[in-house]
Length: 266
Length: 278
Picture 1: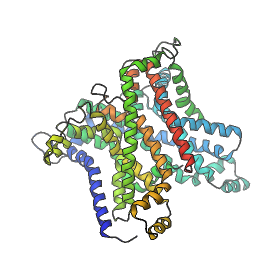
Picture 2: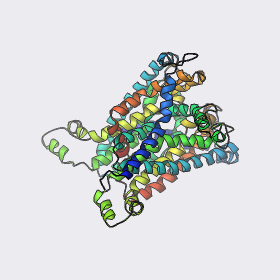
Picture 3: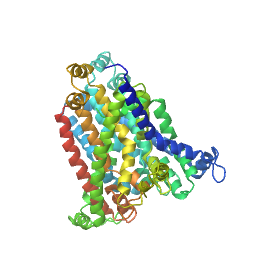
Picture 4: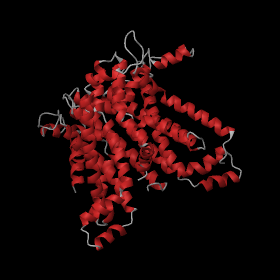
């Protein structure tokens, strides 16, 4: 079955055609973003400069970066620490708390969105990226706890027991023994959460509306609304907005794909 | 447990609050609430917009689930075969899934425009009669949006199927081949049953994703033309933040929650039965 036959070649050709069809929209995106305006249709990077300024993308990238980094860091540390006792303890409270987290997997965030909006307003956090960090941390914790707990249950407790016997405190055993052992699943948690947070649109649309501080998707939304007829510049803005994710994806494609595929198998 | 605190503050407590508000006349501002029982839900049932949004949401979720997973499975089988370009192709097919949905939505809005690339392409190959106002036509708009979601996430389904395929021991498939089974029956009787954990995960993801659909609709059509592409999420957003009908909007969110919870628990059971929970 491992021979490369004419049939395989046919399949290969069909798959390459399909891939080109898949990539066609992205080709349009790139080529239009490089097109000159008016009478000069030659290739130009001018659109990128215009979009950068008009859409205030520098500040949007900073806000998105800040929110993504803070949320993901919090999610990783908190979920890993929460999952550890949940995976190791067999007491009733541990099961109850785990079930509570699993309930969180079922709740669509649309339900919490509006009451939380009011709470954030009362706390004066509306328009502040911190509100997003809090929201994402809370929202993404259940899934990450789920992933970490599943991973830890399969992990041999012998390592940390050995560390404890050698006179290491429980906190130190966690940070210097367990956390490094969890590196593969941490990679998955980081990738899934970072891409989710970076791409999310509805939450920042609500919580940061009417302020100067926008995340990239919301900044693009406002920008396109304003300049809808200048597609080349709009597309340049879109390319800038997705560039960070695409660069990370292309640089670490194997890891990213594994993260998406493996994370969901728990 | 600080994790629990964040989770409770950002998701659990507001969800419970939300569920409570659904039975009141809350307007989002005044602290005085009157209990109105099922009034909001009755209003929902009688409201044409809400009913069509509910129907659209279910249709969208069903269409995405079936088509996206069918394409995803075909792509997975394709890149699992011994073709030379499989690694590169995988990167291509999955790429749309990491792109911000707002961006893909704008991109497709441009492609779909009456003067856009799709109609130009159809014109170029002489299929002028196939040219459409993809997002402006009331019968077509919803399916145009669905097509974008499928284009974006078929690679995601592919990746999960691929992981399933790779976990199937090669000997089993080869043994079946030696016994003289053809490729189709080999897939149906050997590969397919062993893919059922991946299938369940994919079904769950695409159903839930479809039920919650917001970004693509909001960017491409804002629910138009005439509410033809409204989903539950766009109605929730519009009612709450444009019309200040908070209680009504939350009642809608409760309906969505129940829908998601029921479907995912049914599927979760299926997942456990197929032994794929781990």
